[in-house]
Length: 287
Image 1 (cartoon, rainbow, N blue to C red):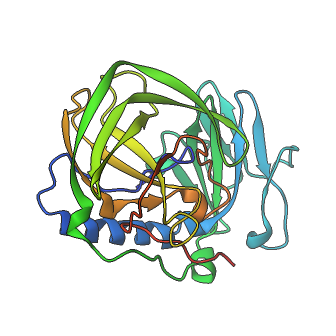
Image 2: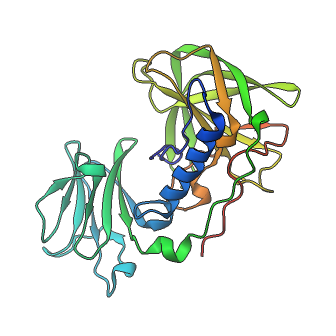
Image 3: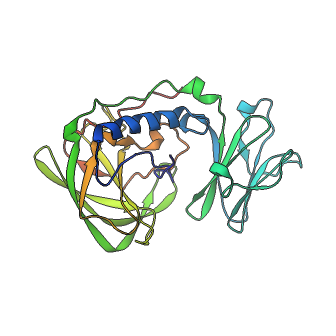
C-alpha cells in the first residue's frame, strides 16, 4: 500500500461502487495500521535521500545500524551506495550483486546489517529510502479513528477535464512538485454542497485510474492533522464515472503526520466549512 502525498504512498482502499462500506472501513483501518507498524512502513523510516540523474548517495559508516544515514560523499569500496543511472536505481555494496531497485521485488533489498533500502521514483529523480525494521517497536503505539458513521458514505458527482491541468505546488520539505487537476467533485455534506478539485500524478487519461481529494475542515488542528487529509476513489483506467460514491470514513492523514521524511502537498487542499468527523484522527506523537 504505497502512495502519493509525499510523492507519497496511497493508503485508502476506496471503490467505485461500495458494496459494503463498513467492511471497506475495517479493511482500511487494518491496512493502514499494518503499514504503519511494518518493516518498511511509516514508523520504520530511518533516513531518505533524493537522488538526481547521474548522482549517488552512500551509507556513511556508523558504530551501529541505528546510526547509519545517507551521505553524499563517496565511501570506500565496502560501502553501500544508490545511484540513478539511465532510469535505473542501482544499489551496490558488498555481499550482493548489483540491484536495480526499481525492478526488484517490492523495489527493495535487505542489507546484511538488517536495514532495508528501497527505491521509488520521485518527479525526475528517485528517492532512496532507508528503513530500520526495529524502529516501529520503539515508535509506534496505535492509530486513532473516528467511529464508523454511515452518514460518511455520500453520493457525489464528478466532472472530468478533457485535458488535465498541471498544478505546481510546494510541499512540506520545501520541494516543488507537480500534480494534475483532472476534474471536480461535488458532494453534499451536512446540508451544503462542496466543490473540490480532484488530482492525479498522471496527465494521460488512459493511465488515470483514481482521483485524489485533499481536505482541511473544522476538525483540522483539533482532532485531525492540521496539514490535511486525503481521500481517493478508483475506477477503470480512463473511465471516470460522472457519479461516485465516496466513503469519508476512509479519510487518512497526510503522511507527514507520521514522518517528516514524506513530501506532502501544502497548497492543494480545499477547506470544507464543516466538521468531518470521519476517518483518521490526529496521530500519536512520534518519540
